[in-house]
Length: 157
Image (cartoon, rainbow, N blue to C red; front, side):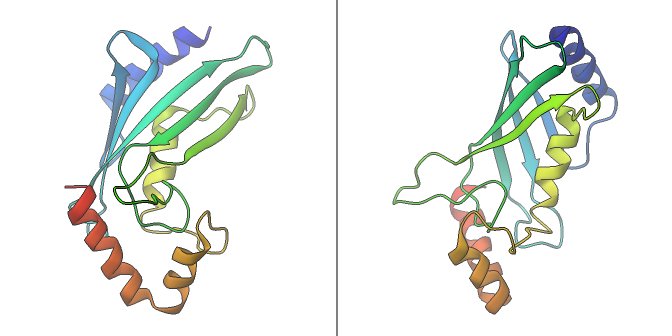
């Protein structure tokens, strides 16, 4: 059942891809995808190319469709969302577990990409993964955006 749905999502993505996003399976493994999100125009992330790995874990339970785990591949300066990278050089990204999807709450790959992409323009600093970045965003937006642009140049172009 999960495989059939994933094949349909892949066809849907090919026919109607979300703006500034692309995704597809890694090799022949339909449960492991790589996604790309382009930095939105007129944002601090313009010109950036952000890579994500999406792992789909089918559930044995008939009520649950699956669980998606998104792992960041590109360092991103955000209070919430793609995750904050620490260390020099940056370490692996923080996983984002989007949760188990039930039949009444289906979230397809394109919706996941759009949700993550929206974090580049609306990062929600009131629910941060990295409080320091959220404080920078709230207290000195100009400095925050400058740092975000520097990260784009350094890690996402």
